[in-house]
Image (tube, rainbow, N blue to C red; front, top):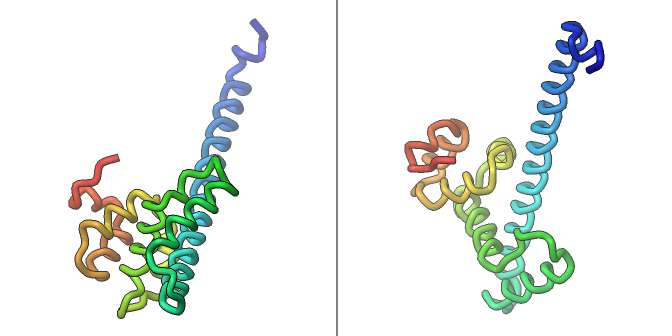
Length: 145
C-alpha cells in the first residue's frame, strides 16, 4: 500500500477531485439535456409549420421518423411516437397563447420525461408553467423518479 493512500491531505484532495468531477459530469448532462430539448422545441415548431403549409398530413411523421432513424440509428428520440410528443409539446405551449423565450428556457432545464408528464396532466399553460418553475412539485402530478 502506498504511503499516499494513508496520507490525510492526499485523501482529502482525492475526495475533492471526485466531487468536482461528479459536479462537472452533472453540469455537462444538464447542458446536453438543455440543448436536446431546444432542438426538440425547434423541431416541434418546424413540424407544425410544415404541416400547416403543406399537404403532407400525419403520415409524414412516420417517414420523418424512418429517415432520421436511418441517419441516426443509435438515437431513440426519433420514433414516430416521440415526434408526435415533440409536436404536442410545442403545440401545448405555443397554440393561441405563445410563451416567451424565458419560459422556453425553463422547459429546456428539466428532463424530457418531466415535460411529457406535465403536458399530459395539465390543462392550462399557467398550470404547466407552475410545475415547470417548481419542478419539485411534480409529485403532486403523481410523478416519481
